[in-house]
Amino acid sequence: VAGVTAGRLTKFAPDGRIAGIFSLPTPAPTMPCFGGSDLKTLFITSLRTDRPGRYQIGTLFSVKADIAGLQTGVFG
Image (cartoon, rainbow, N blue to C red; front, side):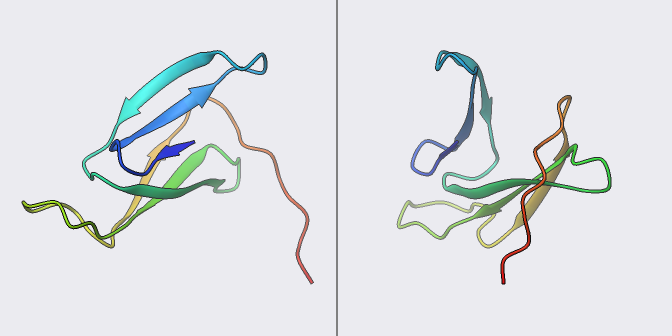
């Protein structure tokens, strides 16, 4: 789950407990999704905020994950 105003991603276990918190180089991460041929690349975008300072706004981040995401159906 993206912490849009917290600058982090929160990973939840199937039972709902927090399994990890990951800080990001942007104050407003959005839209995390898995991709790549093995679904082990996590893509995250960033949102513009009114916070002062220089942040990586409008950036697409990618990081290798230790778990795979789930494939979804095609819309349309």
